[in-house]
Image 1 (spheres, rainbow, N blue to C red):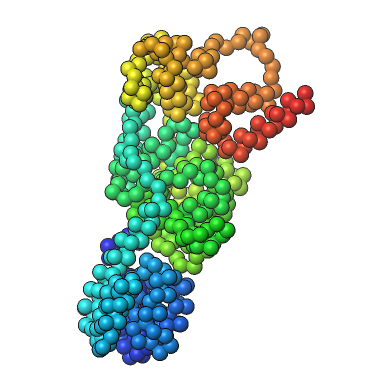
Image 2 (cartoon, rainbow, N blue to C red; image 1 turned 120 degrees about the vertical axis):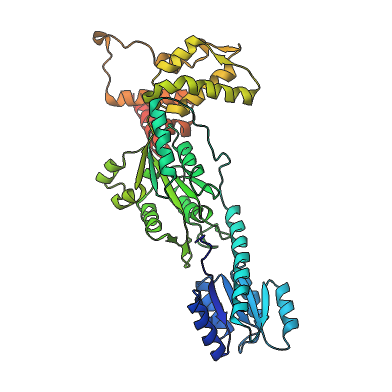
Length: 457
């Protein structure tokens, strides 16, 4: 859709049968998609169901004045470009029409080359107007060359694969546990690709209800549902010619999966409540912390969508498998928070040893939170053992001897783990759900279950 050579969709409105047929045939031969109408009413009906890029409008029609047609066309689709076709003695009317929103006018008869040049200029204007409207609905990421820190063999291999994948234009699936930095890697893929100058758009599939996610991805027409007071462009349109990052794609519903599959197969979709097909040129980078093959076996994820998304697959190792990077990462985040809080903290050798030995179930996201808390709460210039959260220090305590083991059910172990993670993020349920690798809905269900069990006892 973003290609330079794409031809405009035309609506030709003229009551002269010969002129209409000759122009339609010639413009079609030159690669345009042309819809024709002989009256104003016919044109308005066609325009309501088939959005044209450029409308060629004769000012004199048998059933209504061309100014009336222009006014109603602009009401239906403000972004369309209207070129007036005028006969002798209607120049003043054409000038009046341009004040009402027409882009240009031509006197009939006009050479086909001049007409095509005018169509081209009008279409370029229309594309700029539409692009502005799309960007107003859009989401952007300011840091397009993110900080990736590390020097371990595992990290160097990851970067090498990112560079290889960035050179392609192929859909990519990023796998990894919660908190390993899947969005950062997706951003890097985009910033090093040929699409780097185009938008990089992020949507968190797990954070939105199904109806809202559909509206965000595909957009909607005015009146498509209660509260849809204006037309909204979807994120596929915002990302046109760029990259769309579908975070936690494994959490999408079957209906969303079906719609995603169609876009991947055809590069086309419709707004909610719309009838016009929209074509886009988007590279999809998706990510999940779920085992999609197990989800496929259970009937929770479409196998055909999986193979469309996983043309290339990038696995990010958890932090515990690249422990050689922990020291470098901790120093990097400490420097960042020093800058944010106008401090000059450093990490003591003893505190750093604890960080290096810890298992980091929440991966880099958990490390960031720990460093931030230590920098904020430490009263000295050097972060010591006491400044490391108790949950991290407790994670290093020696295992209990076998004969002293407390026998607990799996359900009790699950409860303890959930409550421990919830305490680590100071009760932030959204943060706890991310660390646990579950949706907020499932976390609420678990907490209610624990509460009911406590009340029963």
